[in-house]
Image 1 (cartoon, rainbow, N blue to C red):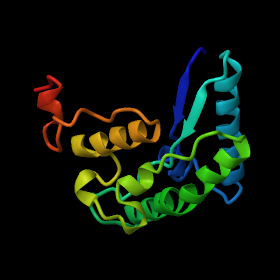
Image 2 (image 1 turned 90 degrees about the vertical axis):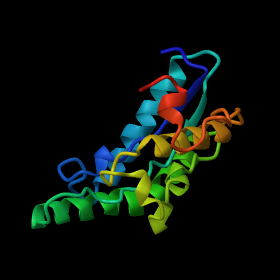
Image 3 (image 1 turned 135 degrees about the vertical axis):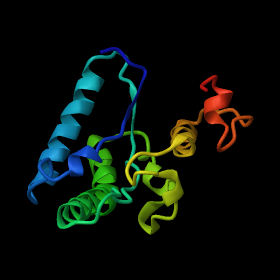
Image 4 (image 1 turned 30 degrees about the horizontal axis):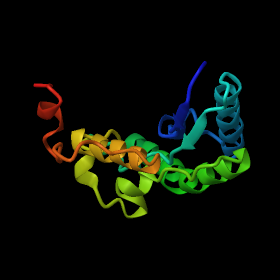
Length: 162
């Protein structure tokens, strides 16, 4: 793999119950994360600039109320909203990255879960959420964010999608 810039943002699917099924899973997540970044670094000369991002918050899947859905939501929220916001920066420090973790989590509502309107299904951002995500990543890289003429609610049409 040859890359100048690598952005790694992992975690939401990892938080699902059969994937994160024990307290030791955090150790495996960290080992896998480090291995992925090491592969990216090893494949490029010069070494790429690596950014890691704390994934968006998990608001909880909506659907028919039931014990199964409630248990799954609680499990994923515990991982995505409680564990990963501390674990990803720790991994970044351990990797000796020259960049700060990108706080996508905070930009999309953080621990207050303050932007549920950006997550119609409780998990996946809508177009406005993806716009905020893109701006957050680009700004962290010191690059021009999404053009100012693309405002919230105008992304699909402005980019030619109907």
